[in-house]
Image: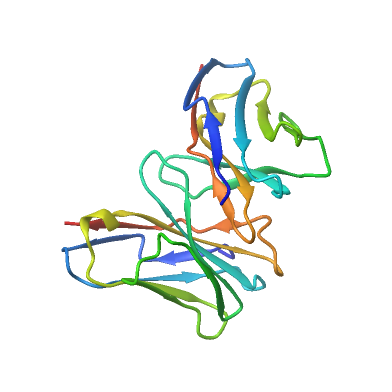
Length: 114
Length: 110
C-alpha cells in the first residue's frame, strides 16, 4: 500500500497516560498534516510540516501535544497526560510540494481515553 | 480564520435522484475548495476539487460549482447509487491548511 499509513489504528489509554501515534506519508510528499476528528464533525487542523520544519500549529494544540518529523519522512504526534476530551480520531494527511491541495488522508488512529 | 458552513447535515434521496450539498465560506482569500467522501470507519477521500479561477467542474456523475462573489460552493451528485451513501465534507483553504465543514450524511435509498 503506497498511501498514507498510521499506527496504531486504535489506542485505549487511561487518563493521565502518555500516548504516541505514528504517520508515514506518501514517499514523495513533503507536506504532512495532523487533524483531529470527533464524531459528527469535520476534521480540525492541528499542525503541519514542510519537510522536517513544523510551520504552523493550531490554537487547538495545547502544550500537552507535540509533533515531530525529524527526518522529513514519518511523523509522530505525542499527547502527554491524556484527558477524556482528547478522545477522537487523529488523522494524518500528506500532499505534494508546498501545497495544501489534494491532501491524501490516512485511516487514522482512534484514541479512547478512559 | 476561515469559517466553513455546510448544509444540510443529513440528506436522503431515492436511488437515481440527484443530491445537492451546499457550503459557504468566510475568507475571500480562499482559493481552493475540495470535497471529501468518508465512508463509515474509513479515511476521507478526495472526490473532486475546484480552484477559484473556475466556476464549475464535472467528473462523471459529480460536479462542483463555485460562486466567489457570494462565497458559496456546492456539490452535485446525479443518478445517485447506494454506494454514494457516506458522509461528505466540503473544505476551503486557509493560509496553508484546509478548514472543513461539519459534514453531510447522504443516504441513498434503493
